[in-house]
Amino acid sequence: MREPYSAPVLKELDTRLLHAMRTRGHSPAAERVARGLAMLGEYGAVWLAIGVALALIDPDRRDQWLVAAALAPVSIGLNFAVKLLVRRQRPVLEGLPPLGGAPSSLSFPSAHSTASFACATAMARIAPEAACLFALAAAIAVTRPYLGMHYPSDVLGGIVLGTSLGLLVPLP
Image (cartoon, rainbow, N blue to C red; front, side, top):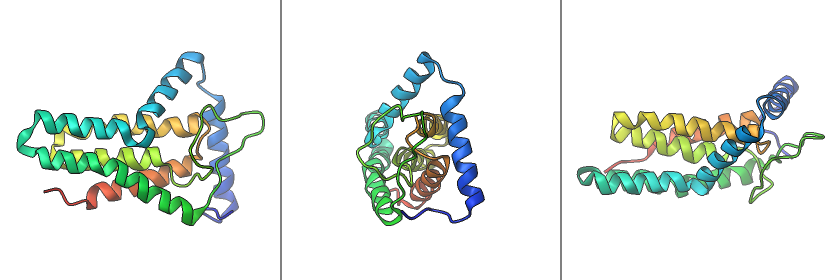
């Protein structure tokens, strides 16, 4: 298993942060909200829906919104390619099983974070008022370690990858 970093102190910090997120602030209601947000972020579906909806209500920038929406599945594919290169396994915390399932055992980077920040970044480039979508992107991203699906560094890696994609994608 290759790690995205080699310093033991960073691995220890990552594990401590994950443990804190898995043991603090949990209630049935909070976990339901986190699971709901995570479901919205599955395969970038919410971002595809937002982009298509904005394309329908803003015909002058329809092509740009559709490109931003298409970035959701594209970023998921690119994310998986990075996962295959890194091959980091999902976290395992003794006595704290993950509160969700995943299509792969690979963890770095978080696909939810990648797609969310790619689309939020591209959409904010199209219309500055769409920057409010970063709140949704952050909420989806934070669910990943909260639910025990990813280390915090997986989320950070996804944020960096997604933001980069959102800045680089050409918008017509």
